Amino acid sequence: MELWHGTLSEFIKEGESGSLTGEMLQSFWNHHRYQPSVAEANSWENSLHSLATVSENIQSKDIGIVLEYHLPYSGCRIDAIYFGRDENKQNCSAIVELKQWSDAEICEDSLNVYVHGSEHPHPSQQALTYAEHLSEIQSAYVENNIRTAPCSYCHNLSKTNSGPLEDVRYAEILKQSPLFIKDDETHFVFYLENAVGEGNGKYLLDKFINGKFKPSKKLLDVVDSVIHQNDKWHLLDSQLLAFNTIWAQVLKIKKGSGKFNHSAILVRGGPGTGKTVIATQLLADAIRNGFTAIHSTGGKAFTTNLRAQFKGADALFAWNLNLRNAPTEGVDLLLVDEAHRIRYTSDTRWTPTLERNKHSQIEELLNAAKVTVFFLDENQYVRPDEIGCSDLIRTTTKNMGIKLFEYDLSVQFRCGGCLDYVIWIEDLLGFTSFKTGNWTDQYSFKLVDSPYELEKIIPDAQKRNETARIVAGFCWKWSNPLQDGSLLDDVKIGDWHRPWNAKPLTSKAYKPETHPYTLWANTSAGENQIGCIYSAQGFEFDRIGVIWGPDLVWRKNKWVAQPENSFDSPVKSKKADTLRLVRNAYRVLLTRGIKETQLLCLDDETREHIRHNFELLTESK
Image (cartoon, rainbow, N blue to C red; front, side, top):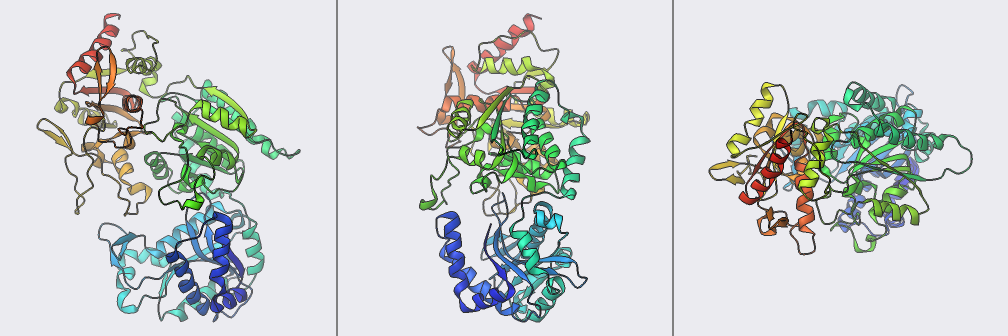
């Protein structure tokens, strides 16, 4: 969706007359039903006037222009796109990132820049990533072989203050996506004329406006190669059962006989049953066969990790919030992983009053695709505003007239493939009363007596060329990194002190591969850091060490939550079912290990209860 599109002549006329901003404000209101901020409207007025003035010097008039284009399923907007043919008569588009910056400072530890104390990506890098994203997902680019010519235009930035943005560290970026500044308009016009000055712009504009979300072969190759080079993605038994039904529903989309009936599939499974395996397999197969597909979750750590893992394919992985204003049935297949993390609403504290309560989040997810698949573990939600469950999905699909299929997964991939271990954990925590036989010859579980003993799991795993991490209940404060990036030793047990994993800062922009969650899970930086529930959910390691704190204790033959010992504010609120949430959290933490779990329990009575339950198993061997 764009706020304005037209020809170069129309853009120049309306941009210089001042009517353009009014049209965009109306378009914004028509789409969102609320007005943008005054600052954003002012930026359109100033930047687009400057851009229109520059564009007046372009000789060709057969150029199409799109302003404020909303990238599908990303929450990002491209300031301006010019369409035409380049100097070699090839279809091309110039992607322009506009900034009103008058100065900037280098951020020493990244490629980001500081502007008035806030951290931003380099504008040329923004334009470059938008161009790459568009060329991979928009059908007009794929079908018409439209190449991209990204650039940035800082129309208030003088040569005196442009040094930081032209620093040598940005040389490769600027080679691919040049920066133009104040008094550099001649070079900017020359760049635009070389990119789109040979006409055909009206034709390409029409193709773009009527285009659809469609990944290119390049994107397909990235996803496909990652998935099919790893045996753990192969589907078995109940996984294949669910997959076949989902795939059949997707194939119906192409049959073309009459109106396609919207459908939904609910796939339930505990930790390690392959929910993400199925989701990712479906994602790759859908794209390979010409369907459009998105993988979505409610967990930032998990999605960020997937974006980092599938380098070059990160446009396929979204957060549930990104689908808030998605076009109705805009994609063929939506894969909602971790559906237990669905919330009442996609509203945030920044959502304008007039925009609130339009739809529930589950309605948005169902509206976004022709086939919506929910992968659900009803005992994994860990925050009070997470409401995903079978009954919610059943009720909503029924009310919306959407056919629902349901499947339960029994295959176990994590925890050594030992389903009995997972059942034992669920029985221990009171989720079930089902008793298992002795599973200790299939999976390694060990109670340890000190944090020093527990942290040996890391070097022991390294000797085996395996992965290992330590995680803990949220029983200590979680501090922000210091100015130099170092971490405070928040997790304290006697004289043993260790830091939590680095907390992501809202003021800082991260690439998926350099996000603190990714660094904790996938690099050596995480080996000496303790992961909390929000970092660990969705991840798995060969071996996991768990610190069970005093937020959940065993008293008088029942589990008791002690919110006074928790530092997780939403979970300890009066409205929250704290007992259920902390039990869910420890269930998640205790099922992250593929081969082994080691547990340090800090409460004496609770530790003895766990020891007793474990010894009952070994005695029956």
